Length: 274
Ligand SMILES: Cc1cc2nc3c(=O)[nH]c(=O)nc-3n(C[C@H](O)[C@H](O)[C@H](O)COP(=O)(O)OP(=O)(O)OC[C@H]3O[C@@H](n4cnc5c(N)ncnc54)[C@H](O)[C@@H]3O)c2cc1C
Image (cartoon, rainbow, N blue to C red; front, side, top):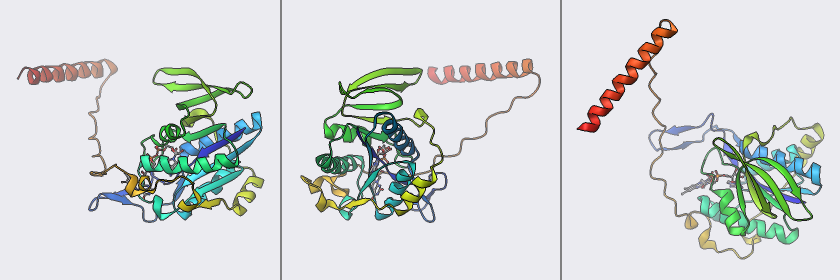
């Protein structure tokens, strides 16, 4: 079974700040990491390879430094990696990103057909969750989003059964193969990488393709030119004001809470009546 995992290198959002003057991300000195959801996607692909055999390939679009994210995937256990990197891809929104990725997937599939594509549920910087479904649409394969468990793959009948997370539980979905999954973090726990993988990753160099290495590419659909999204404004949300702390015995606190809720209700009714 050939599994392809799409991964994104992202700034560590625990550290990143927004420059209040320019309203842009201040990336200075911020380390780049493998998108945490993608770490789980790679781990799941490696586990599937252990169950069903085959190969795990990685694909990323990004600047040359994104090689580090692919090396991290090799550390987790991936077999090979591809980076598409070119000025023509710069400034891509989710539409142009999924287009470029799908063109690269086409090339990979020419070398070796794919059974499954796995993406993270979302990237922690862009946060849209649109790239996975966008890639699936372009490849004309079913997208199964928010997957929290892969129950079974029936290779002979080309079928997969997964659990898809819902707000109040999960649903069981069956799909034909090939298909694309976007996975939740809870799908697995990523263990520390074994030493041989770390050594292999340190020496590993992924295949790097520019736009000229991809076939049937409509250049107007790439990068900034192919990106209809306009970022109107970026800002840090105001810090929530501290809540009111109730004191006294439990009974006193409950009584205070009821008074507050009734007062708020009265105020809302007065406002509604105006
Ligand atoms: C006008 C505009 C210009 C932009 N310019 C740039 C830019 O120059 N450089 C830049 O880095 N970002 C740029 N961005 C941000 C970029 O659009 C998004 O980060 C990117 O399209 C992915 O969207 P997302 O982060 O919401 O990913 P999501 O859709 O949340 O990601 C879901 C999953 O898709 C896969 N995925 C997402 N992105 C990639 C990728 N690049 N390679 C492989 N797999 C991926 C991963 O599996 C990920 O877990 C720009 C955005 C806009 C609107």
